[in-house]
Image (cartoon, rainbow, N blue to C red; front, side, top):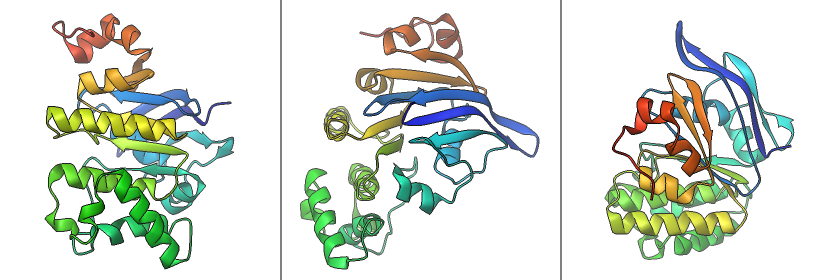
Length: 241
């Protein structure tokens, strides 16, 4: 039994098919990539897993429990955290307060939440920004804050929606190191990303979506060697090294 099991997952929006009959499973402590062209349904998949969207069909199971259609706060409490493609800090709150909100998923103690938040900020190299307002952070800092807030919920599975987008090469390498460190601590990572070097470097397996359907799944090497993937997304010039 996988940590996360998706069976025949389907989503329609007023007759428009966004995701169709999608099935896959994630194993404990795995780094699993999800790629595909814009509009292929990647974020829709995340939204159904995390409870923002109710599927039109199919099911999602986490640790053997059917979580299909549960409220997002319940799914978060069960152990699925997430970030968003467009970062969503509480702009008027401090960085520390932003992360405390995540930590309060696990405790009613403000003091305990504050201590946990400070630990995570140090891990994310944001300790010196604890008193800064969310609105005053740079894009890379907002990415780290988004990740820190999700980590504060103490997830078993972390859904990361383009957490590396907009980073320069040095920042990208730092983020890859951060994500590997999180996985080494026992958190399973499910990553949507368009930066091919990053996703192919960090992932153990990759799933490719096209028009809401899976066209390939396998190791990075297997995926980039798949003719359907090259035609639909990667292009002939792409090679994995």
